[in-house]
Amino acid sequence: MTEINAANAGTLSLGDQTFNRLGYGAMQLPGKGVWGPSADPQNAVAVLRRAAELGVNFIDTADAYGPFTANLLIKEAFAPYNGNYQNLTISTKVGFTRQGPNEWTVVGRPAYLRQEVELNLRSLGLETLDLVFLHRIDPKVPLGDQVGELAKMQKEGKIKHIGLSQVSVAQIEEAGQYAKIEAVQNLYNVTNRKDEAVLNYCEAHHILFVPWFPLATGALAKPGSVLDNLAKKHQASPAQIALAWLLKRSPVMLPIPGTANQDHLAQNVAATNIALTDEDVQAINALQ
Ligand SMILES: NC(=O)c1ccc[n+]([C@@H]2O[C@H](COP(=O)([O-])OP(=O)(O)OC[C@H]3O[C@@H](n4cnc5c(N)ncnc54)[C@H](OP(=O)(O)O)[C@@H]3O)[C@@H](O)[C@H]2O)c1
Image (cartoon, rainbow, N blue to C red; front, side, top):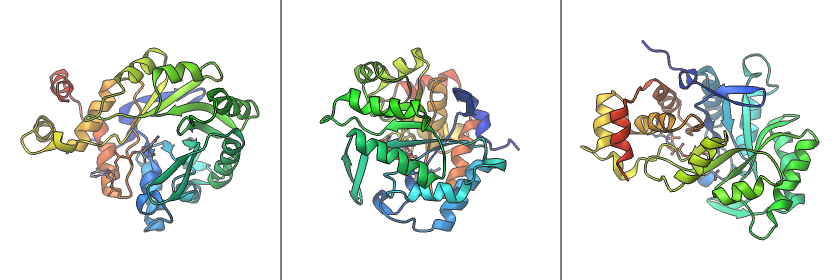
């Protein structure tokens, strides 16, 4: 039987940190609407540890997930980040506040971003954050003030690498005047490829591209569809085919599927074993 391990996806690096090219997103761990405590904290910790057992060593979170619920679960699962957990790369995000279930407000004032970096360090139990994404650009604050504050904290040793989320090519280029942008996290999946230009830019500039909502298949997966037929051909689910397609789409692609379910987790990691042919990929590319 083929081993289920995220290492089958190959690796990517940020500075001296190397990680497997299939990660895990922790947004599904807090309560409904990404608000409040997990419905089953013990299970949430078990899912995180199982992810590490399956070779997942890139974990994406944000202090806004809960707020703090996802970070505290990660700390409970992995701190003090030694032994089997010493090679984890954890990305987090700043610049979003929460007021209730499914409510998000952008706040990009430098003092707030600094507080969030400090609170991410504390809630994750880390001394340095591997990768910090600006969750959204706050249109009310100059971009240089937002990215500049992250760059200051990078110089102070609080942050190793800086990324942006939900941005255009022009915004990546503008932000690049204030800091080295090493990762971009945008909505991208088989049903939504609006950010092809951003992905192509990232590939050309060796920037990691982290597609969020990677499993979305929507109507493209209905019985008899191309995705459904490919799923049958590869003895997989349409969601697994969507992940396999993302992995094949670009070498800078780093999907972070999220789940609070151990079976789903194993299925997502097993997608790294699916070898889509060029013909399969062309058939998916033609869908829109
Ligand atoms: N930068 C941003 O603005 C932004 C926005 C959204 C998300 N994100 C990040 O991206 C990560 C992934 O995005 P996402 O959570 O929105 O989308 P996703 O990973 O594509 O999908 C998650 C959903 O799919 C279900 N699921 C997971 N694996 C499954 C499987 N094998 N079979 C069937 N259902 C499955 C999950 O429910 P179960 O728990 O029941 O499995 C959950 O409802 C998040 O965790 C977060 O870290 C970032």
